[in-house]
Length: 270
Image (cartoon, rainbow, N blue to C red; front, side, top):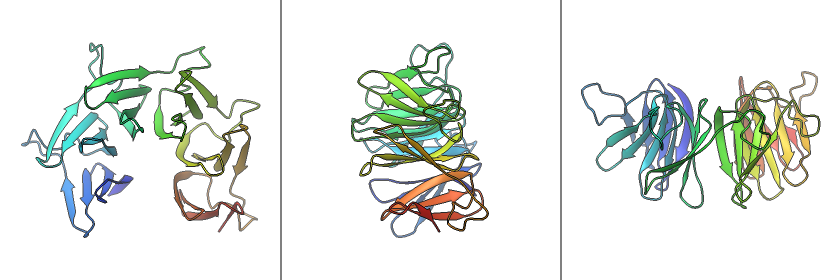
């Protein structure tokens, strides 16, 4: 199976989201349960193209699909689909869900493909919406949102496809974008694949498509770029950095063709 995301829930289950092969749950003992669409069962998972999953504060699991947002009641093994409805005043802004993130208040942030960001309150089913607006520098820079993470201040860092990285100030309700097109806050690429926030050092690590690894100092806005160099054995192994995993002051970079081990203290890759 083509695994798109791995997610660990509060019970230490590992969930694997796959392209075309549905959803898998692996418990602590290694037992595997597969969830696939069954045309004869209206309560089965509605789509086998599963991009993301997130557990809410009430024990429900929310699943981002190619065809919408889905809720799983694990006890009943019942899936409920929430679809984009053009005429609805409150609901999904787009049926294609790319990422999910639960913030400290329990609100779900939904990144969509060409629909911007939806906020969803699981208890009351209330939606809010943030979209990309032309000629508005303080709005979301792209309607295609692939990753969202929250910092200790409650602000959000948002990875987009084509619009770089956005810093969303929730108090001011404004977006600050970091893009390759800007002269001061210049990233090495505008298509962002992965994010990891180093709160201890105040750095946001950004994996890009063909632009290597970027380090953004969240206090000063300074950006450093780490790219593959065939003559340097200590450079990152590839400029397509799809995933960033952290353990013990080390970043594990999942690139297009290999894994890079990046030391945060020396900022050298092996």
